[in-house]
Length: 292
Image 1: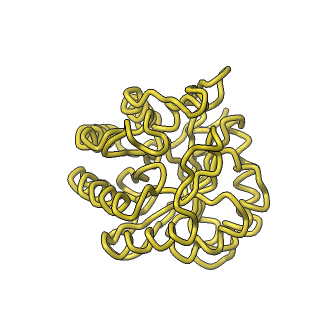
Image 2 (image 1 turned 90 degrees about the horizontal axis):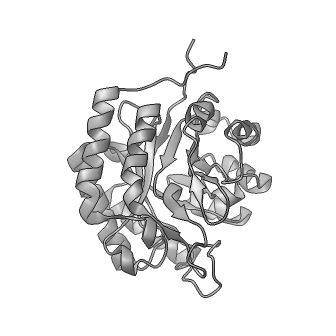
């Protein structure tokens, strides 16, 4: 029998997103909150583009980028200002929102606002952080570390399930995200076998297309990237089978304060999202193959 993937509902009301539902879910937005005005502008662009493609979307932007390459790089607006801006975006657009947390104490504060907590890839094995997110009862996405084998995600799932409260669906509130694997220096590759392996754990899997084409630290004091490869990576992931796509987008990637080189320009969103919708319509939902 195929593995049954437990859908995760993010948000509430008309704009709620079911990750593992009939349509591929999008997690989309700029890497970091650059300002209130820019975040609101980007949320409007994201909402309009997703609606045109008839795809459900969660708006993503970080209040802090704690793992920047250089000490001088822009980190963000901080958790208090970040939560205020994300709450404003929820009120103005109706979209569910997500952001990443880096420390245990941030999980509870962020959970008061966001609909989906995100654990960054480099912190996916931090037991205290994973457990702190699980205890909030808020849906959580955990990115598979660039250093981790896909089958080792079983330990992440077990950590989360061990303390997830029974309320709000309990164990049904976890999503895994694939974002590539370290391959030598400043390079990531994606082993697409990892997608069905992770999905066989019974949780929805999102493919992070833009971080998968990042070149970590590749520009010396910042990361590089090759965003033009991201659309084809999305198509490949959909063909293999995933519950959704994560992508960072920016209205002016050359001036983005974080992850510009691997962000999808907003001018290309219509074409990229149409490809996602068309390919999903062609292929439909794909169950992960079972181990022999």
